[in-house]
Image (cartoon, rainbow, N blue to C red; front, top):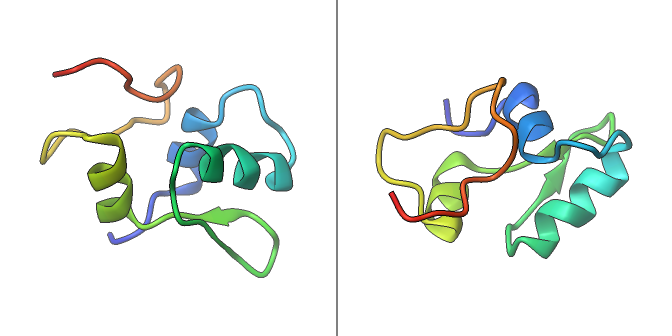
Length: 72
């Protein structure tokens, strides 16, 4: 799996409903965001981990409340 799933993106963008708002939010985090044909954001998992500093093997789950800001 090379891209974040829709559920993972929804968890990261908690509070945002529209795809365009999610794209803007993800870009504001410093991520490179492509868009699917239906307008939903598409983010490479390795890029997400590199930019936000997630440890290898640690993933955002669908039930998460938002981005991981702390140091782990």
